[in-house]
Length: 279
Image (cartoon, rainbow, N blue to C red; front, side):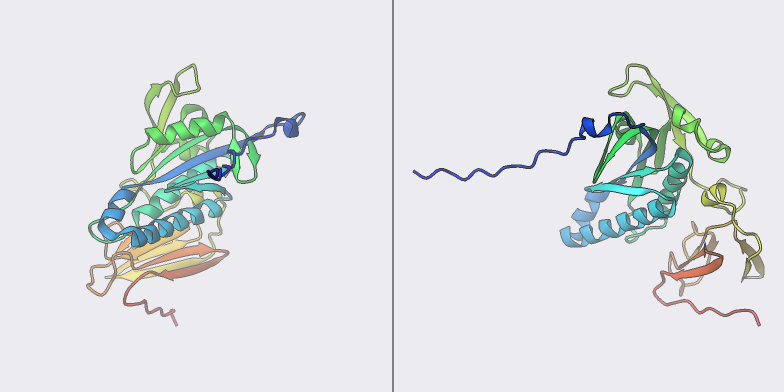
């Protein structure tokens, strides 16, 4: 009787300790970002269309990572593992991710959520993977997070810029796997608070030019946009920075971004956008 062929499985990648002897450890911020409610897409749209929607959402999240000088280490299903130079850029990227997903729509019946776990510390970087206590803690924090939450810890928060720390609130103290002592669990707010000026987290990190200025006029209301604001959304949905009550406007009609000393308009609409310049 012929022997059945045996397929050798590739062993999981492991760091090579000898390669790091005598080298200082890397200090990085680790972010796990995972989509929620993806299962409803497969039920409602079928496998192929659901996968296409999830891929578009992950690409949108990856754009936020790169915009804030981060690196996508790998994708695991509906989850990204990313590293950033420091906790402030990681937090700003996480806020940008949540804001992007808030405006990412499939249809009126389905809205994808996002949960984020963020921790900073020492790690080992290998091609296609990262290892270390900071990675393990970030992986535990995303399991604590619900949809729409950014969860970090007290020690990571202490390393962030003041403008970001003001957005945080302590919600718990608990032990996480791999740690003997309790850690402070902190939620980082990302929604614009009532009465707060239009701004973005990138404005907290970069000294943007205030010379350039654009004024949008809507129903007799003048709205000034300058270089301190990285993004401005327009559309029929009330969550936009400038809601437009018109049946011809799409729910997420357009987005204006400040890029390299220029204002750039991104049209996401069905009917298009007509742009005119003063004079």
